[in-house]
Image 1 (cartoon, rainbow, N blue to C red):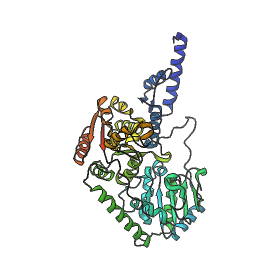
Image 2 (image 1 turned 120 degrees about the vertical axis):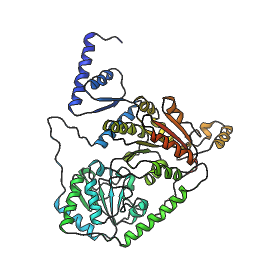
Image 3 (image 1 turned 60 degrees about the vertical axis):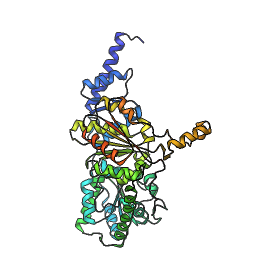
Image 4 (image 1 turned 180 degrees about the vertical axis):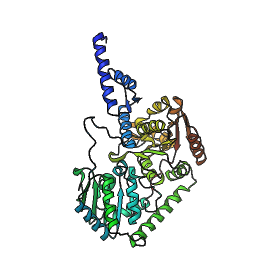
Length: 461
């Protein structure tokens, strides 16, 4: 299509206006896919000093942009408007929350993504340690307090949720990840103290006994002040703590037995155990998948806030590589030296796998670890697949959850100039991961083949 000179000038001027408007709102990064007339907008943004990251999929670009907002906590407001004031909870409700907690026999703090986004880690650590309370992080609340903190009861998650009589939601919501707060995962008589910034989220699914509307960091400060003025500490030798510690020790032993198995193909627990031993404490962990994400949450610890990105509230697959690109761009810009490790199920990787080209193009040294079980939840081995091929048309024979056995995903990375490793054994896993961590210039894929029938350990409350 031919455009007149006036039309070209009109589009260029419009692109410049858009770019300058974005720059005035402190926008530092732009993620997207260009085409007429967006090419001009992207070019004008670069001239204005905005970093443009060209993605291969629009959804991945959206995921990357959302991850930057979460990781940086940057708020963008019109230049004519000041930032909104920090809101505090009602003093009467704070007093009521204090009374309910003091009367609790089996209290539990649940630390959510909102606490991480709200930069509430300092106050929450003090609250936990001053009051001696057990806490459970949600997936993206991991790291607000370290996963290896002595008060963290993630290893007794089901037991703690089921038997708690008072639950304090700190930037967490009773959505599907917390079973909506309903029995049989929660006690039907549980009392909920909910801290949330959004009034419409209060008493969602389960009516809050105490609703604390306000900024999570500010409200935690109010609770701390209440307990400073009238000190109280939950006893560390209570029956509740004894129950939780026994359950954590029992679950840890089960996971350890699974991790120590030497049979091949490897299982999830063996893979994650060796990954946990080698990954840096400060790495950014991105994860998505079914069992890959669920088991990884329990075995790959986070020690710092906002160091984990996963499928989160909506459970959407395909977020991982976009998140990883965003995290890697930020880490390079800030020159932190932290590594970005993207742990993917083989199915999840397929949603946005072409973003490996983006990583190679911008030389982002992301380490992608694909836990490959040949399917969605579970798959079949090569021999079974060949037998199914003899049975007839695969569209009518192959189980819907199966994927091509032992697909060579690592070759996708090699095609664009990155490093690819096919991993079948513990020795190969450790070697490939150590080499990838040592390479700070190139992205890599570890295609880790595991037992197609590998599964999570049985959930016992």
